[in-house]
Image (spheres, rainbow, N blue to C red):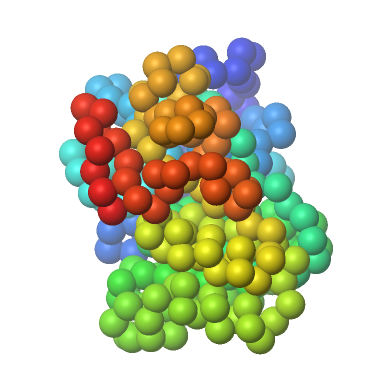
Amino acid sequence: MYRKEIKNIPQVLPINRIVEETPTVKTFYLPWEFEGESPGQFLMVWNFQDEKPMSISSLDPVNGEVGISVKMVGPFTQALHKLQENDKIGLRGPYGNGFEIAGSRVLAVGGGIGMAPVAAFTEEASRRGVQVDTITAATTKDEILFTQRLENAGARVFPTTDDGSHGFCGFATELAEKLIKEEDYDMVVSCGPEIMMKKLHLLTEENQIPAQFSLERYMKCALGICGQCCVDDVGWRICVEGPVFWGDQLRLIKEFGEYHRNASGIKEYF
């Protein structure tokens, strides 16, 4: 076993196995000694040239494995996708606040690669006896993530595609609104495109349902030192005070669903 004698010190670990989830997403499973990690936290992943934050997509204390799901979008993720089993990568973490597991009936909503922390939440909540209904949303059928895995965990899974090629035809928020009207949920959790989460936030506020949302911002240190991922107005650091926030906290983040800042600090509107 690869021991974490000191937290946050980079470890170089072999890849136990790789699962090709979709044409653009692979999940990498690595050996891990657990110390209270929770769904919604993230790891800093190092390919010996660069380092990027990645949400934890699987927590398996029984087999001593942690999983990260990587969507191929640029040079860094392209390099990760070329790796094979037994190749090595660097990890440090975990960082940030994860999802709190509460209530007996939860709706979990994931859009695209935002399904990574949602999948980890669904599995952990299901292990604790919570009934989870999970919306897994993608642009098309080939990009739907984790359906069988989540059904194996005991969740009811509702796939939705923008083009109607599989499951519900439409946006995740449209299906969420339908389910919220039909079912009685104690809580909603979500990760995905911020425009999606903005609408879902308004929906949960209107229906007075407690909700948690995982935000993404440009990160460098993951320790709260550099300030790169601070949000305006309140100055919260996504890597420390987040990445998961409750709905009432999001009311204070005026940029939520409106804009974020790029690597140069310039505002980019959604």
